[in-house]
Amino acid sequence: MPGLSDILSVLILALIIGLIPGLAFLKSYRSGWLALSRRFRNPAPFPDDAITVGPRSLTLYMARWSKYPDMVRIAVSREGITLSITYTFGIAHPRLFIPWHETHIARDRRWFQDFTVITLGNSERIPLRIPAHAAHSLNLTPSNPAEPS
Image (spheres, rainbow, N blue to C red):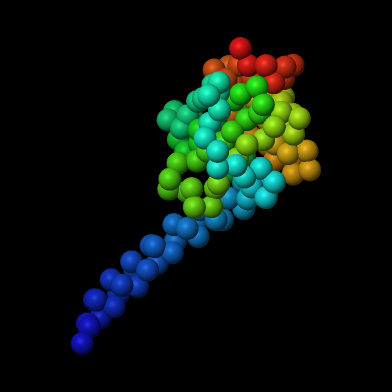
């Protein structure tokens, strides 16, 4: 007959196993990733001509200032922008590809830091804030986002 410590161990393990996907889904919903995935889900690999940054040393923010530290890889090509998340939260964050005509790029300054804000989806309008240095690495400018050099 299992003892109390065995039952507690199983309950704690079940809680941990259920907690990770639950938190991933909640983060996806809160950040707007889930809304974007309804129209822009794309399991295809990054385009060959893409310029990429992340996930290491890249912290970005989405809707409601949902923070993604060292979790997202961004790829920019002539056709659009691809977002892919690391494995831990990948269960609720499918790879996204958003064409340039569904984006708007602007600059912003918050907390003494410069950001490039890419508004994703003409109907969803989910802000993606990336540090200015990452936008520079991707050759993103508000004037001509579709032509990375």
